[in-house]
Image (tube, rainbow, N blue to C red; front, side):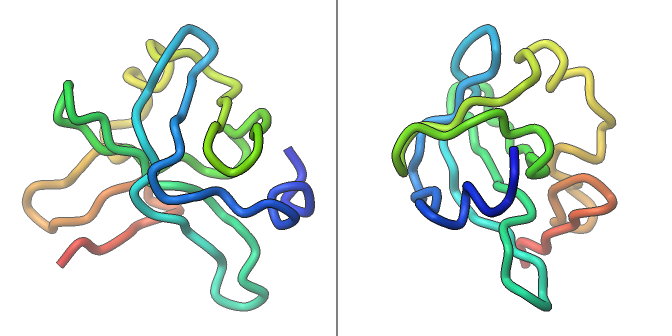
Length: 104
């Protein structure tokens, strides 16, 4: 998905995130790059599974309004991603190494 499309209707905190095979969780944080403030990813929390994931913008297939986001990968594929996609209990960081977010 092109970043420009996402800038026209920003994704809302609390937006529902759907993988190709079902619900992933809800957006709890929006990530932007430091220079031009373009969307670089979203942080998604799944309360039922007690997991948080950083989803880079290239995994976002489309968004419907501001409250629904569709990914281009399945829930299974997301679960199989590098362990750095989840919360690091030692550092308090979540996310992919290219998109670390400190929760401290």
